[in-house]
Amino acid sequence: MLLINLLDPFISMQILCMGFLTILFLQSGLNKVFDYQGNYNYLKAHFAQSPLKSTVGVLFPVVTTLEVLAGVFSLAGLFMFLVDNGNTSIGLIGAQLSALCILMLFFGQRLAKDYNGAATLTKYFLVCLAAIFILI
Image (tube, rainbow, N blue to C red; front, side):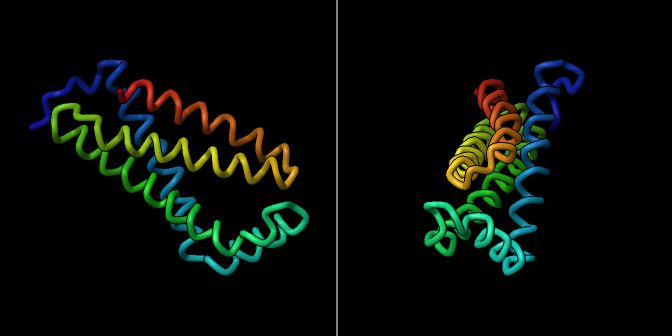
């Protein structure tokens, strides 16, 4: 039974953060799963001149898996929050995985000297940190 007050600003922030992370990471991760070769080829070219050029084949499935897990845990956390009277434990794991994933992507962008891409990730990282903070 849903006993939480959905109009409470703090509760709405928790729900919106988990929803945002669900959309962000499920879309990104599943895009990589369903267009694996296209994304892999793009990343091989993107990192061709970086120290990561020989690791794309190993790191790409790791990042893809982590993105999908971050999205799944965020979605499961949102579901658990709504049906288990505000339980945030699963959503917190989703937010933590999301932050780890953004950190990995940020590291790659910096090594590839894609500073604009790295700067864009900073905004997502701040959302992840906010989500972790409000889901504690």
